[in-house]
Image (cartoon, rainbow, N blue to C red; front, side, top):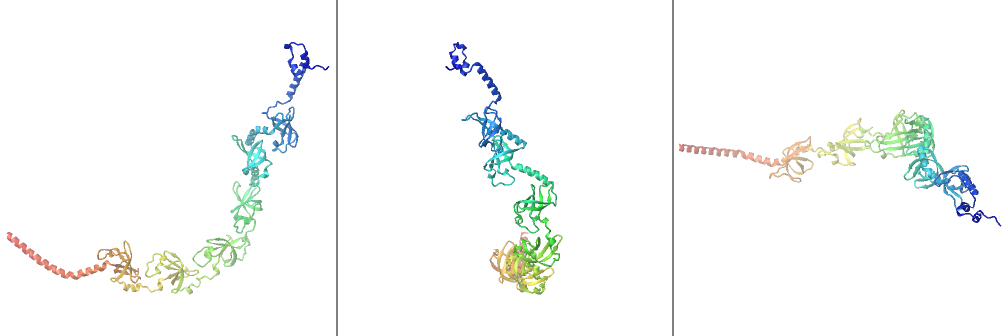
Length: 592
């Protein structure tokens, strides 16, 4: 028969209920065994941590598999953590200490499940704030790309890395950074929305700033350096000198004329430059390339002198003239006034175009100032050289009206030869207020040479002198007192303009002398007789009167009848007076 168990022994024992050992019955252990067990449990509890799902525990990696990390937390069993939680730490190895929290005490297989991510997240905000305040560098794992930047795992928190903060240079391919662990600086925290912004660019800039200070401290004017073309603009090229940028202005790229810097340099090209100048802080550095080469003027032929003919290409065109490159890097200016003997200045574009090969004469040459002025018109004879032979005083010609002034008309006889017709020399009879009333630009006009000044290159012309002065015959025809039929072509406040039948003479009739015999006044377009009351040949002035015609007739009639009327009147007056006196005398006597 088998030995009875402890529970069976207790049941068979004849013991009073109040003395029955229920603890031994339930545990299956007697008092001594129970005491030993309790002692062992206390010892065991003392050797293990009390696990709480809210506590962060430091564990040690004891083994690594393809998918998991086995971590010892000094518990009765080791815990496991998915390697996905260590993506930010690609260098994880056996023996590393990591922060963990209990995820599940036992899974289906009885395995303790730990979480490194939970532990990191719990303490992440404190650590992020510490790094933000201290400015220390943090490692972050670039998880994915998002709109405008990247998502970075920093201490288990998903931080935002803006695209502009990845590098100092613009980034086109963001995907190249996904899955990489990089160094960052925490630049912004929003506790309310749990947002963190990090920057990798800030670290690069800090390094560059350090390099800048070192490079700047060594800069000197005239120093020759090697740099890389960083950016090309219309006004110049920015050169990277190894952390410090300098600018080569477009005028300092080459001794020759440059229309755009891209004609000389390209992005990424390595070039040698010389430091021309910089500000006190050396933040603005002016560089040059052409200064590393000899000046083209130094190679200019010493035999070149004023009066020599040169050939070159038009490189710049402006309204006032054209710049011609007569040698590499050596330009001369042909002013528009030196392009033609004509005194009518036009745009230089009317004579030459960019790229034209031209021949010119050296007018001035200043080697110290490095300036050359050129002329094209000097290649042809000066039209004023034989002006007295071609245009003597009194000679008649046909010219072209070029332009007007308030006082006259400029007429071109040939290219380079212009003459002026004063407004008073346009017509003998017409009163012209502005030359445009007489002719138009481009009209052909017959002229006669009145005066010639070769030194001043001045030619005085006339037009009315080609015909006889009609005022010589008008002096007789329109003598004071003569009467003529005329038409009031214009009537105004002060009077009227009167045109005589021959249409050669315009006269003026004052307003008070326009009154007709019936008391009304002559109106515009009305024809009537007018009497000349003033004729001035010198000033070509004729003053007439309509009123004077009938008033003169009244005066004449009155003058002719005045003597008879006076005699008769005197007689009547005398006889009447006698009769009146006689009657008065008779009454006086009767009254007495």
